[in-house]
Amino acid sequence: MIMNRRGNRKLLERGGALRRHWFRILAGGCVCAAGALIVSLFLPKMYRATTYLLVSDSKIGDSSRDTNLQQMAMLPTFVPFVDNDALIDESLKKLHLDREPYNLTADQFRRQNYMDVRSPKSTRLLELDIEFPDARLAADLSNEIAQGAVRFNDKLNATDTLATQGFLKKQLDQARMAQADAAERRLKVLDEARIEDREKDLAILLSEKDRLATQLQQLRLDLIQNQSRSQSLEKVLKSEPEVISLKRSITSDRFAEVAAAQVFPAGTPLALTEESINETREGIRQTYVNASVNGSAQSAGVEAASARMAQVNRELPELVGRLTALRGRIEAANQEYYLAVEATKNASHEYQTASVTVSSKSQDMKQIAPALVPERPVRPRILINTFMGFLFGILLCGACAIAVHGYREIQAQDSFTVEDLDVAPSPVSGARRR
Image 1 (cartoon, rainbow, N blue to C red):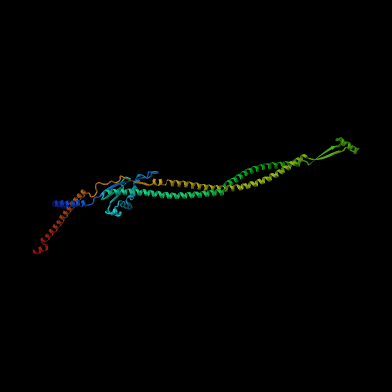
Image 2 (cartoon, rainbow, N blue to C red):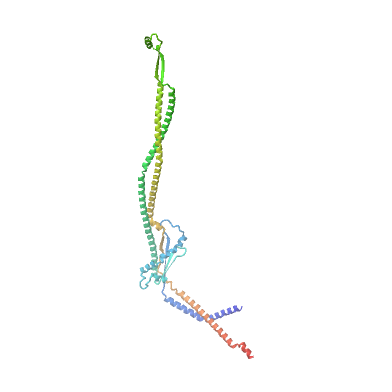
């Protein structure tokens, strides 16, 4: 309670000090306001010219897949297109601000805060503010820097287009060279392969194999038949006699009987024996010989055909393997050639559409709402400066009054303490007096 009372008492004392010095405080505020007014009147007038730049996607080609939020997040990266020393220096030279009476350089232009570039939230705009002592120069400088940024963006896009075209032209030339090499290798493989001759040889071997198979089958069938016939005929030959004997009486022939009677008048009747070759056996033997000969010939034919068939069977896999390898090489050469042709087509298409491709991936920058010549200066703000000076003076004088009051209060407390020490008797001296 005692501390609260003391605090309230001090607060009241300070309020009383302010009331006692209100006139001085008010006078100090007026003096500061007058000073702020005089300074504001003598300060150079600054005019602000504002223009806006729109950063948007290219309308050529496919639209960008980026969302609006991503594009707006990337918008601050375009601030250096406007706020760069090269563009500022070029604009100053074009408007002759590097000469008398301004003699501005890019560094001085920045240090005096003549330019401010920012991107308003939730927009695709860049706001360019130029504050300059001359209203017309402020507008001209703002428009010139904005147009210079647009030209710089267009120049970058054109440079990207030329660089892309050069790169794609190099790729196209490489693709054409690769296609020529692939075509040369393809012709060389086709010339070395002679696939038509190999295929003709294969067709000949296959037809010969079919013919040999049919012939061999027929020969074997005929051989079996002849061998069976020979065996049968051989058995028949063994049972057939080689000579046939025929006995007959002479009396059976009237003329032979008369002749015998004359020769042997008293003899017995004579008998005549005739022997002749067995014609049936001869026919069978002839057939047997023919069958044996045919069998031998057919056996030799079977052996010859079997040997040729074996040779054909050995040559066929080799020829088929060679043909497969050659066809693989030809297929690889053809595939390489077709890929080279497709690569050349793609490279040619990309080269022809290079400008569209680069433009579709670039950002357009356009100046909208060109800066107009401002009619009123934005600085100095005389009324605001005067009011702020008056308020500053009141606060300063009030603080000084409170400080003086506190200082005097401390001095009063110190003098009161010293007087008390001088007047009050010490306990020792009082005891002695007694």
